[in-house]
Amino acid sequence: MSVLIFSPAIHRLTLGAAALTLVSSALAQTVVAQPVVVRPVVVQPVVVPPAPEQIVIVGHYGRLPDNVESASLVVGYGDLDLSIPAHRDILRHRIALTARYLCDKLGESDTGPGSCRDEATRDALRRVGTIWEHFAPRGTAWLRPPAWVPPYPQVWVTEYP
Image (cartoon, rainbow, N blue to C red; front, top):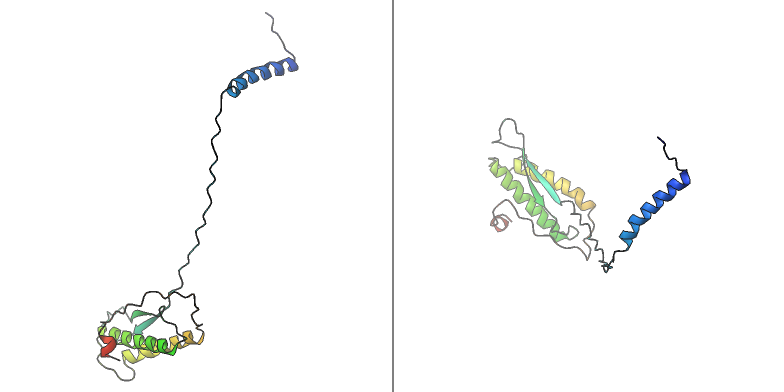
C-alpha cells in the first residue's frame, strides 16, 4: 500500500482553495446596509444631598429605664439662614421648645437652674454657637428646603414665646 505525500506548498494551496470556496459563497450574499442611528449621550448630573443641618437636643432626667441615661430629639435648621439675626432667634426658640417637650416627656416638672430643660437648652446653644461662628451667608442660588416639622404641638410656638 502506498501513501501519497504532498509537499507543504501543495497542502497550503489545497487548504486555501477550500477556504476561498467557503468564503466566496458568504460574500455572494446581498447585504443591505442599515442606517446608523446616533443618539446623543445625556449625562445626568450627580446630585449629592447636603449634610443634614441639625442639632441634637439631649435630655437627662427621670422616667428612663435603668439602661438608658438620656433621650434626644433633633432640631433642623436647614431652612434658616443663620447669618440673619431673626433666623438665629427662630433657632433658639426651636431649641427651647424642643428641650421643653423632651424633658416634659421624661417627666420633669422643674424649670430652674440645673433642670433637664435648662441643661439641654444650654448644651444645645453652646454647640449652636460654634455653628454660628463658621456659618456663611446663604447665596442667591440657595434653595430653601421644606420647613422643619417640630415634634411638639404647633400651638406651643405661640403658647410659649
